[in-house]
Length: 107
Image (cartoon, rainbow, N blue to C red; front, side, top):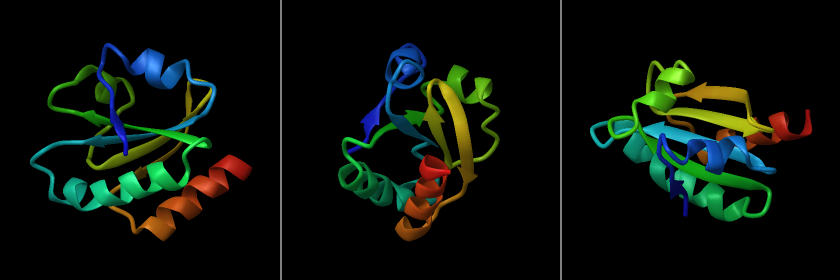
């Protein structure tokens, strides 16, 4: 299961993590975000130990999406050593999401 993070905890949860971290920027009113939610949870379970997965509700946490220029949702960002190493906007099938993450983690 993906964990929620907030503007206050983002630094501790994502930036200071030693692992790869996938961040899902989403909102309650976003249809594609709701479609993507079970995919994110599956990836969180499948890649446990390799990737930490966090969700940021953009309505409750406006600072972090602004800092990373999140313009549309869902936006997925993969972080390593506190830096975003890749960004995808829009809902993806699980296979495409895993392929994208694998390419960034092995590249």
